[in-house]
Image 1 (cartoon, rainbow, N blue to C red):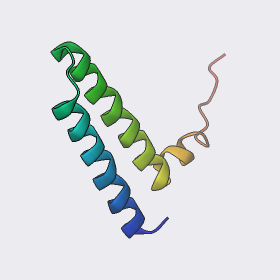
Image 2: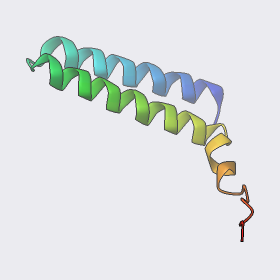
Image 3: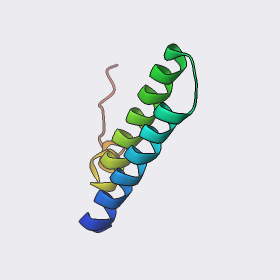
Length: 65
């Protein structure tokens, strides 16, 4: 994935989140939960895009017997 597509996707997600927060009337708690969920999803997506999350499954933890 190219850097330009990453930046465009982040801008699009930010604009959509701003539009939802600005123009859709919701309770403050629901907006906060929505913002947290979107931020967590974007962070996970970025970690996966940079290959950090994909390599985490390859780590072997020794078993203690």
